[in-house]
Length: 150
Image 1 (cartoon, rainbow, N blue to C red):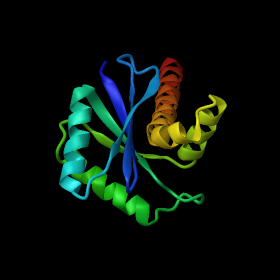
Image 2: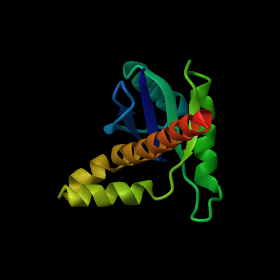
Image 3: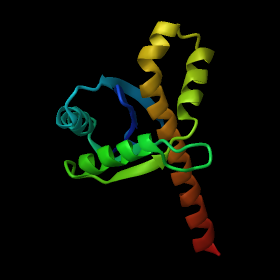
């Protein structure tokens, strides 16, 4: 298996997380500072995905509490679509509700300073998104095994 990479795409930064090669564990990789050029941002992410040897990219889709898409979700969908056109791996959108709050809480639990939390929050949020995605994959695998054995 190859890695799955997750992205937390914001207006100022893009958090990147990845799985191990067995796709069992998600970990924060880095946070990229966005430039004024969408093309340059896409190139940075494309390079990171290739360097991590990913076979799939999961992009956090920011929905509101009711599950509806707003302006930020439209921006993320556009970014994802453009990224998919540049990569030779699937790009999938994934509900990221509460990922930033969860990541913030985890960093607080680890007693990470405010300054370091600010630097790491987006990569940590990408890791939370990826953990959620991996849990869903495991649920689907278990359901597949149960229904195929009946």
